[in-house]
Image 1: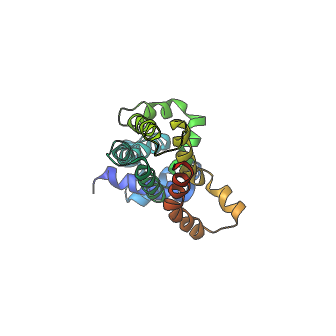
Image 2 (image 1 turned 90 degrees about the vertical axis):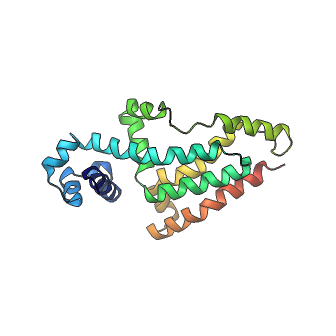
Image 3 (image 1 turned 180 degrees about the horizontal axis):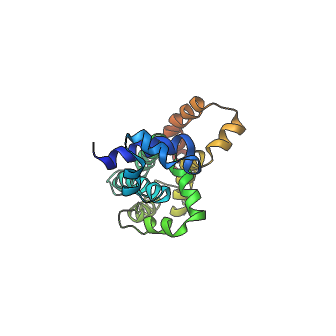
Length: 197
């Protein structure tokens, strides 16, 4: 394992436990088994490390999403595959949704950088396919972008507002994770049933 891989793995552990604000570079260095000077040699500060960890994770997720969007599957299968893939990914990278929201407020330039990246998830073909399946009578008349907004919102929101959801529903970490596992299929079923003609 390279030093960078050790740092990324350690940073994920610490960011997941303590969040961005609570994480300390010394803790990340200790978790990685390196000294703090080496960590600062590779990443000048916590923000640059977090951005690198995020881009590394995003670089794993975006190709999966684009593969789903651009496949030959039906829209219904794409919805199923998206909810399953995204939730599986975020369960293993639970700090990411909160970080994105934090960065949208504190560092919008960085967010725009990855949203403009040529490898970002691109739903253009999926939108065209939704329009075609509406015309073919498979899907009820619906605005494609509204459908995608529903899929994204129902999939992402519980993770982005995880602490609030646990408090309102009075559930433990284990129960929350069990519910997220269930949502891999329930979200898709609910949306498909609502748009199926």
